[in-house]
Length: 94
Image 1: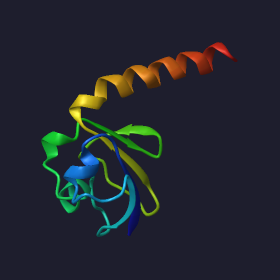
Image 2 (image 1 turned 60 degrees about the horizontal axis):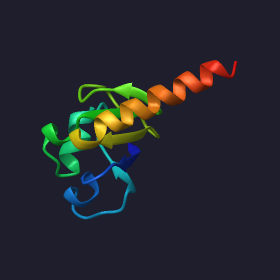
Image 3 (image 1 turned 90 degrees about the vertical axis):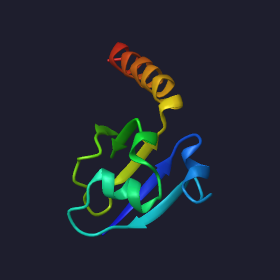
Image 4 (image 1 turned 60 degrees about the vertical axis):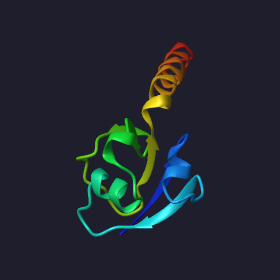
């Protein structure tokens, strides 16, 4: 199966100096941890995972066509705060 991966921060250079967004082939029933391994990243370098714009974990089973965003520890707090602010703004506009 194929998933699209977006790498945040230093994960871009740590994952074989590839592009920020790439398509990765994985076996069926692969999990987030399998994706991280295929990218050549240690699991402890991934602190925040979003799968199709929803929070995920290293144990989440991935599906064909998923869009996965991975963020390192140094960006996870800023990402969390930004997403929280955005959610508040979305709810305020309703």
